Amino acid sequence: CPPGRYCATYATAPQLCPAGRYSGGGAIGAATAACTACPVGTACPGTGNTAPVPCSAGTYAAGAGSAACTAVPRGSSAL
Image 1 (cartoon, rainbow, N blue to C red):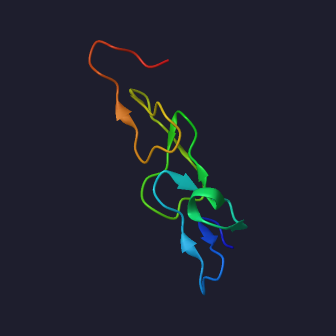
Image 2 (cartoon, rainbow, N blue to C red):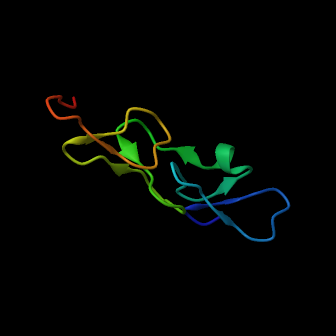
C-alpha cells in the first residue's frame, strides 16, 4: 500500500488513513490497526497523512491520535 493509505482486506483500492492517523506505506488491515495513531505532541490533520506533524510553539496535542494541535491557554506553558 502507498504511504498515507491502508489496504483493507478485500478492498479493491487503497483507502486514505483517517485524520489523527498516518502510514509510511505498507499498511494492511483496518484503518485503526493499519494506520498508526499520531504520537503525543504531534497532529495528523486531514486524511492521507504520511507522517505526523509536530505541534508548533504555543500549541500542544496531549493525546495520541490528535487531528489538530490546541493553543496553550493564556497564562499557561507547554513543556
